[in-house]
Figure 1: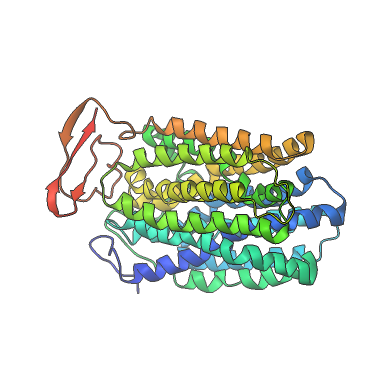
Figure 2 (figure 1 turned 90 degrees about the vertical axis):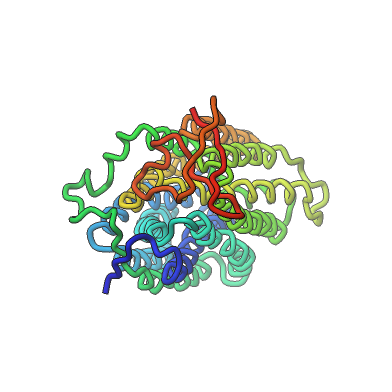
Length: 447
């Protein structure tokens, strides 16, 4: 039966949903991040360039994100549980089909289109459902779920390298097909939840179902523009961090270590930043702009790392910059989704999550191929990381147009109550903050 609480339960079955979203994130973005280790094998087998093989991951990422509003619309109409279960089956079939590829086009269709479509049906509904289960601890819960990305990368990066060395890329893709099938039981754990702010009937018509009316809200439009720019560079390390480490003179397992270090830092930062954001000490839009800018600077530093002279060296400078990237990118990730209920209200958070994924797909589609093109033209990934870092930094600058992103003219006292669940968090220029010792309000500054 569907529970009908007065508001988000802020716990209970919500932690089970958080665990399911953790696994969904790990088997989608975590797997995508590690898949870059197989790109050199694809290039060698099919005798293609880095730019050509980069389209495999780029298509998977772009389809997953561009079709996310479809997953959100289906979830709004039929519920998240069946949609995520079907998505898990499609993802598994995509990997199995790709294991028998005879050309790079087959990989584009299998991993890019079929697996990408499956991922589109799982991520947005799972994360949107999780946001509905929490209020005061929402960003922490989202951060916990998003650590699945880093934890999965930590395990899958060396495991995938071992599978590639032992079974070749075809055997590795078959085994990954079996692993991604576990998305289906994760979907079964997404129990539906009815909240007071929900519309009485599901949206009718394709535009209403996709939530395109949200773009009429100024704050969401500013957020959308910044997110689209950030997406142009944010996912390049998912595809090319490992090849960049190989180009810098590190061996296969040492390159996997670079990915693992970034993954560990990413996972830890998501938890810490989620806890920090829920304290209410700093407005969420301000944290979003700051950590987005730090991510851009970290990517610039990754691109400027010098070549390792000794093939047996550990590449300490690249490990350090990859760790800095992981910390900043991991802090940014939960804020992107944690700020959405304040922008659109709890009733529209599933649709908004799908739209955010679609916006980031614009960069996800163009970023990795552009990075591969620059690598083919220049001989290394230096220019690639400089360009993607600049895109992330530019998008973070646009976030400064969000209400509450900048300290402002005069102090005001905000009420000592949690922010409302109907989208007023960023429409009203006040930020609700609680002191650790009690319900006294803390002064913030707004215009």
